[in-house]
Length: 237
Image (cartoon, rainbow, N blue to C red; front, side, top):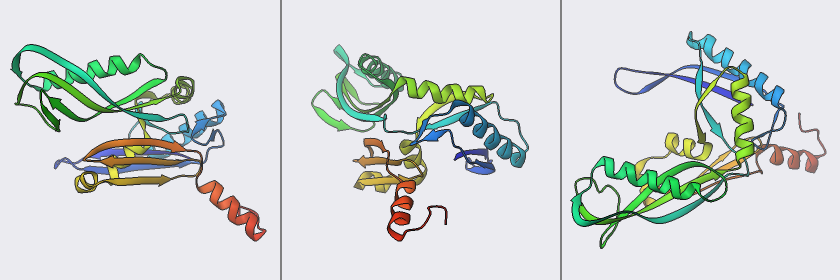
């Protein structure tokens, strides 16, 4: 299925769900687009339902991305080296992530996320938030998520054919983790498993940050079919 959720920010900063649209979709298989026209139509129907509930017109959206082509890795890169010790600002960290982004983009696959896990400042290791500290040399420990560019662009094209500008693509286990996990769970270490119809999305958090991200093509449809075969029943019962 394709699901559209429209949120409205409250004065206190929390988010109110203003509209939800759900549309069956025969154009997706294991999280990937197999029929462009069917996927586009499902997106249109889902958006129309959510827009009607919320009373607003939707022109752009954040689009969730899944599929077995999603892969992740952890990197350790030198991102800053000054002859003299200097203060670390948000601008320095932003430049550090941009450096990792450029280096990670050089290898294969479409780069989707560069998530900081921690920093090493000279001889101090695994500093989570170094703003205000001083260092000459900075190494960044990051979690990098990539996907197959052709599969990604096919999903983007289906959304744009439905009249939706893709504000950004977000890997679904990362989005689910942001919504469901507490800071304590991330610090202690946790595995989030989001079982859908065609894929099971996995996010592993360790020491407060993402450590592993994946989507495997085994999920609810497979469980239902196995039970149906075992009981001699059609899957739709």
